[in-house]
Image 1 (cartoon, helix red, strand yellow):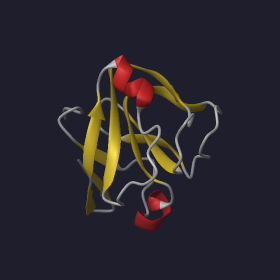
Image 2 (image 1 turned 90 degrees about the vertical axis):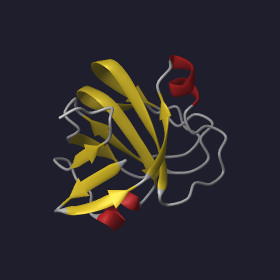
Image 3 (image 1 turned 45 degrees about the vertical axis):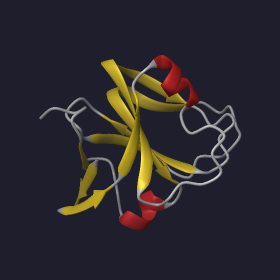
Length: 121
């Protein structure tokens, strides 16, 4: 998966959560994640997405992604081990979870694009 921001490409090795079971578990119970890794949650059809951090031990940045791969909103440094609902705010096809703080470090923002087969252009 590649995130394109200001003509700079950032590559991530991602696990893809396609099924309800995989999406329900996500990154729960993990104690660490390398900076170049993440998890991509995909939804078909597009829908309003709500995430949470139950049983998730590491802070995450969540990038909410439209059908065309454009990042529509970002939740930075989500709080581990909480049931607080984190909404996409609008319908979309995916959510990319990466390590907390990477959005700021890499300068990612809404309007950037995610390149992955889940988002045809």
